[in-house]
Length: 172
Length: 110
Image (cartoon, rainbow over all chains, first blue to last red):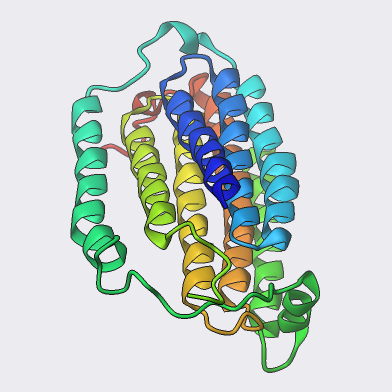
């Protein structure tokens, strides 16, 4: 079972290392590539958490569509951003906010409740069976499942697509 | 714990997710480029997704219950819509002001 820990460490390093490099890299194309690395790490977490369907969507939708969209946006808006300052004037306030958020969540919530000695450390008994893609698909279209949110999601996607076209269109 | 097949404790996932969220918050608050700010938002959404799936995996006794997975799948939809509209706004701003630095976009400042 040590292999699980090794895989977890690799995925955590990819996710967090990619995120830190994304925030700190001056070149936005590099930022987009680090975003892809971070998203791959998250897909690995989904595999470890026995959610293979989500891992597949993560690679298809996030890396295949959203990250490529980001690269397109970077190339369409190329300007003199490489020679200006990386961070704005409130950088230290931002760093303080992020750090305080992390410490608060870690010390205040995660470690007391779910930590090694926490009240919910054991958790509920977990089953060995894994939900298959078939289970998710049936839930998404069944009448007492998620068919209404599913249709709402398609309306949201249509509205976002139309909105993106209208906003980014060249005004005549 | 004889039927638990996973040995990685839940809090490790939560720590990774909290770190990812904090890095995203820092990126959103501190970067000057609008595209980088949108990337920070994507990082935060990913942290939420890890949390959702981890809690689903560790606290749902019956794995036929896919609530957490479906919730995470809807988050993908919202993230895709947000990225599309956000990048369209960035491109539109760049066309009008020739800049993607958010401090240059002060049209609504009173």
